[in-house]
Length: 148
Image (cartoon, rainbow, N blue to C red; front, top):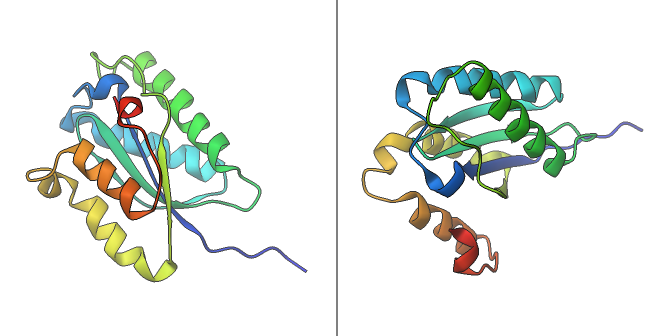
């Protein structure tokens, strides 16, 4: 018997101290690089987008890939890419940790639209408020001091 899965993950992580270093003009380079990391890990990218201080990735993982390993690969490789190519001159590194939330396949189109419209969304909602809302919505217990 073969292994079949269909789990959508929304992965979110921020720059260290949420510094606004991911300038809009160069984000596409970063997103394309991350897409390559996902492909190399046999994972499918549905949508990636972000703001100056964080990114959202909607993906499905190959069954042989561990979520924590994938996020580590993305953060380590993209940090190296950013620094070697001087894509974001003020970028230090990624914040420790990440958020990952699973969704039904039926929610895919809404999630794609949500991630695609990050700029519009963040005109009225801060990243921290967005992140806290997701944590609460998914029943994740957290201590605010660790969200800094």
